[in-house]
Length: 208
Image 1 (tube, rainbow, N blue to C red):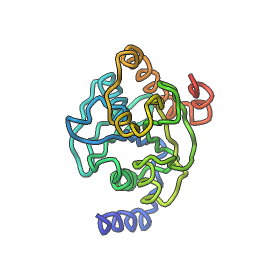
Image 2 (image 1 turned 120 degrees about the vertical axis):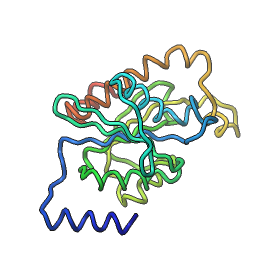
Image 3 (image 1 turned 60 degrees about the horizontal axis):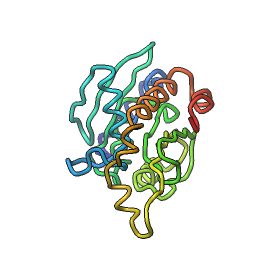
Image 4 (image 1 turned 90 degrees about the horizontal axis):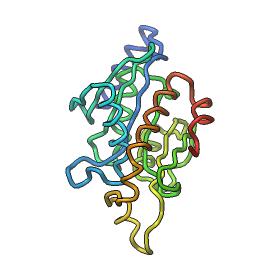
């Protein structure tokens, strides 16, 4: 894979191929396998699944992940669900970032966040991983923290020593009642990221 990426980089450099500023890589973080479906930790997958359903597109299994793409108002959205498991998410992000010739500022990673109240959306231009294994690996592979992320709050209402159970657990009945609306709002934030830019999207959606 590294050899292929090197060839691609050399080819682009030799042919003066500039990054495609109208392409956007939207990465939803999660774990593959039925046992992880509909869990809090897989909200990144869930949000991308919802967006794909709205656009009437389907995911196809490709190298290092499942991909779907659509065009809207002159922008190309490439939705990626890495199939490498959470703690190796960076491999998929790096591969498709380079293959599709997408600038880093056009990457948005969608992930769960224990430190935010349930359903809260927060977009940031950069930042540390905050203990999140998926973000940790992306930071390591890309060798930077300077990419946008959409954090979806999963709350921290769990008893001592039960953090893993909470993160990998399914939504409770109260959360489930509000989930569709919060997922829909996250999809709108993703679209806004590409159309209106990160700063405007942060002002519109953060904390809402």
